Amino acid sequence: MAQRVLVVGASVGGATAATTLCAAGIETIMLERELVKAKPCGGAVPPAAFHEFDIPQHLIDRKIHNCLVVSPSDQQAHVPVAGSNPGTDDYVAMVRREIFDHFLRERAQERGATLIHGTLTGLQVHATGVEAVYQDPQGQEHRVQADVVIGADGAYSPTARLLGLAPPPRAVAIQERIALPPEQMARWEDTADLYLGHEVSPDLYAWAFPKRDHIAVGVGVGPAHTKGIKQCLENFKRRLGSALDGGKLLLREAHALPMDPRKHMAFDRVMLVGDAAGLVVHTSGEGIYWAMKSGEMAAQALAQHLDVPSAENLRTYEKQWWKHYGSMYTFLRFLQAWGYGNERQMEVFTEMCRNKDVQRLTFDSYMHKQMAPAPWKAQLGMTRDILVSQVRNYVWRRPSQRRNMLPVS
Ligand SMILES: Cc1cc2nc3c(=O)[nH]c(=O)nc-3n(C[C@H](O)[C@H](O)[C@H](O)COP(=O)(O)OP(=O)(O)OC[C@H]3O[C@@H](n4cnc5c(N)ncnc54)[C@H](O)[C@@H]3O)c2cc1C
Image (cartoon, rainbow, N blue to C red; front, side, top):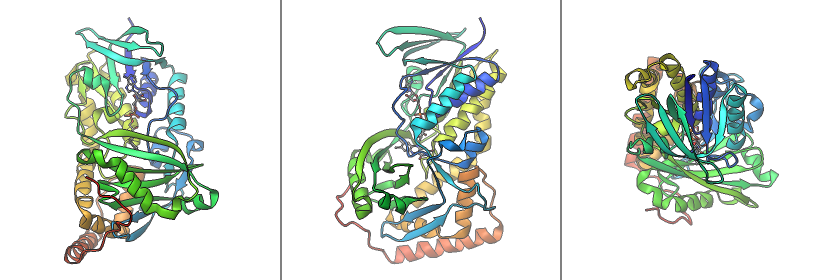
C-alpha cells in the first residue's frame, strides 16, 4: 500500500499540513465535519502568513494601519502598525474565516489532497497503522486506514481525546458581527481597537476588528472567568456606546482557545498541530499563523520519517518548534501575566504601548515573526519607562470606567 496520511480538521492548520504533504508526494486525506460555517474567529492575520504561505491579497477585507489601546480608566494609546523598517508591508490583515479557510482547503485539494465530509468518532493506533472511524452527514459510519494521523481538529481535538490525552486549560472567546451604517464604519476605516478592564475581560482583552461590511466585537476570558463571558461582552458593547448606534447583529459566535501548549505534540503514528497542540500564543490569543506554521512543520518532519513514524522520530517536529519559538512563547506568557494581571497593570500596559521601542518590537514580532533583541539604549529606555509607570500607577489609582457595567464573577 502507498503511504497515506489522514489529516483530521481541514481548517487553517489541517489544510496547510495537507498542502505541504502533497508537495512531498504523500497521499493525503482531509476529514472535515463542517464545510459551510466559519470557525468563530477575529480573523486578524499577520503579513508573514501571506508571504510564507503564498496567500493572495484579495482575501484581505481590510488592512489595519493603526491600533487603539484603551485602558480601564479610558487612557488611550494610539499605536501605528509599524516595525523597525517601516514599509508597505506594515499592516494587520483582517479576513473572514469562511473565505480564508475555503481558499486554503480548495488549494490543498488542487494540490492532490482528498477531502472527506465527515466527523471523526473513533481512532485506533496499531503497530502497523491507524484506523479512523467517521460519520458522514447522513449518519452513516465509515472507516479509513492510514499510516499516520495528524490531528488539526482544534481546541477540543477529538484526535487527542480519542487517544486519551488530557485536555489543556481553555480560555473562551465570544464575538458578535455587527453591520454598521457607513458613517459609523468610517471610525474603524483602518483601525482596530483593543480594550482592557476587569468588566470587559478580567485577564485577557476585548476587541473591535473591522471587516469589509461589519465590525467584529468580541471578548476573550481565561479559564477562571468563562461563566461571566456574556456579561463581559455586554459590558464591552456598553463601553463602545454610541459607536455601535444603528448596528444590526449579523451573527454571534463563540469558541474555546487552548491556553497552554501540550507537553508533547507527537506520538507513535500521531501528530497534533495548531489549537489541538495548544499553540495559541498568550497576550494576543493569536492562533491562525501558528496553526499554519505548525501544520507545515509537522508535515515536513513527517515526510522525513514516514517509513518509521515512531514517537521518537516524529518528535523532531516539536524539537524544531521549541527551538524556533520557545523563547517567544515564554515571553508572551509572561507579558500576559504581567500586563493583564490586574487593572493597575493594565494601565501600565497601555502606557507602555506609547513607547516607540515597545511598538517597534511588538510589530516586528507580530507582523514578521522576528524576535531580535532591542539595542541596549532602547532596553534601558523601556526599563525606565516601565518602572516610572509602575510606580505612578501603584501610588495613584486611576478610576476605572464602570458606567452602566455589571460586575463579572
Ligand atoms: C472568538 C475567537 C477569536 C479569535 N481571533 C483570532 C484572531 O483574530 N487571530 C488569530 O490568529 N487567532 C484568533 N483566534 C484563534 C484561532 O481561531 C485559532 O487559533 C485557529 O483557528 C486554530 O486553527 P486550527 O486549524 O488549529 O483549528 P481550527 O481552526 O479550530 O479548526 C479545527 C477544524 O477541525 C474540525 N473538526 C473538529 N472536530 C472534528 C471532528 N470530530 N471530525 C472532523 N473535523 C473536526 C473543525 O470543524 C475545524 O474545521 C480566535 C479564536 C476565537 C475562538
